[in-house]
Every structure is written in structure tokens, then in C-alpha cells.
Image 1 (cartoon, rainbow over the protein chains, first blue to last red):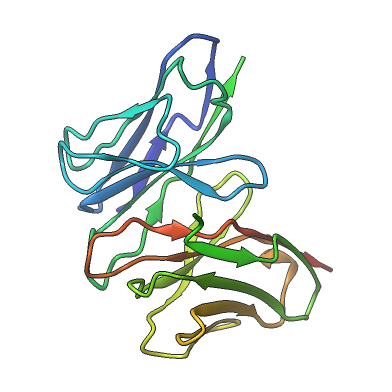
Image 2: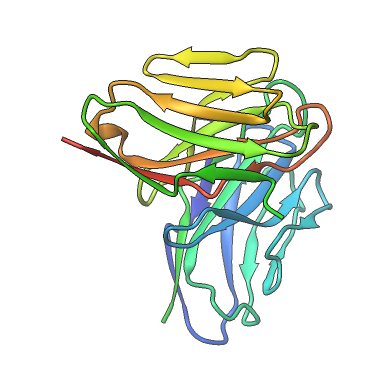
Length: 114
Length: 113
């Protein structure tokens, strides 16, 4: 089955701790994205990547870091610098250009600070 | 600034009624306009999409209307059902130049039985 897989589904973080959210896709997509969604809010872009070993900050990158060492993988680290990390995190991927450019989303990771 | 503006924020419709969600954009480079449907605790899923060379696209009970001159597009859900209760996001993107997706702020639809 082709798709985009996020893990874990639920994650709990202690104050001052870094945590990493996993995102893997087998759709052969070039571009990958991380979004944050707060209750009743829209999707806010954290980071995106067009190609391996390259990524750009989105609208709310502070307190987050990413890597893109493989085309299939785009992990997101929520660092201790992110003061309000409790949210629903969504990873997405797409072809970077052309007619088949829809974004496919994972099922999300719900991060809670305890 | 917000590239895609979506309204209303929430919508309550009776079963069998028509749900209408509106979006507006500024960037004339956008040429791909998808709508996503999201159920609670799930990731958004593509519902229907349109390119600006057509003014309307229909798939089952879902229709996108597109007004290029006004830079507006809307989603119409005919014969709305309780199972349609979800959050809907419009989005915009440029197809042939890499551009990130720009999402609207979302509309939470509640269809009353």
C-alpha cells in the first residue's frame, strides 16, 4: 500500500525534553511538509523540503528542527525551545510540480506536554 | 499575510440542505485549488480539486465553483448528510513552479440529523 506513515500516534513530552516525530512516505514524492494544527485552528506550516538535504522554514519554525537525509523520510524534532508544543502534527508529501501535485497527509501525531 | 481566506469558520446545516464554503485568494500564480476534508483525529484527505480553466467541477454531491476574475472559489455540498460533518480546508498552489500549499483556516461543518 502506498502512503504516508506518521509515528507514533500519541506522544508525551516532559518539560525540557526533545522529541522526534517520524514521517515516512513510499509515494516517491519529492516534496514533504510538516504542519501544526491547534484545536479549532487551520494548518500552520512548520518546515518543508523540496529535495533531499534541503529544507526551508515555514511560518512557525522556531523551536523545531528537521532533516531530509532520504527522499522517503522527513523527521521533525520538537526541541525544548518550543514553549507550547502541545498540538496535532501533520506530515504531508506531494510531487513538487506538475498536474499530479495533490498533497497526501499522514494520520497525525498528537503531542502532549506532561 | 494570509494567502487564502476561508469563510465561514463554522457552519450548521440541516440534513438534506446545501452547505456552502467560500475561499478567496490574491496570488494570480495559483493554478490548482484543492479542497480537503478532515475528520477528528485524522489527517486531511483530498476531496475534490479544480484548475482555473474550468468554472465548475462536480463529483457526486460535491461541487467546486470557480470565479477566476473575482479570485474566488467555493465548495457546495448538496443533500448534506450527518456523515459530512467534518472540517473542510481549501488550498491553493502553483502547479508548474514549486510552491508550497497555502491552506485556508478551515470550516467546521455540522450537519444536523
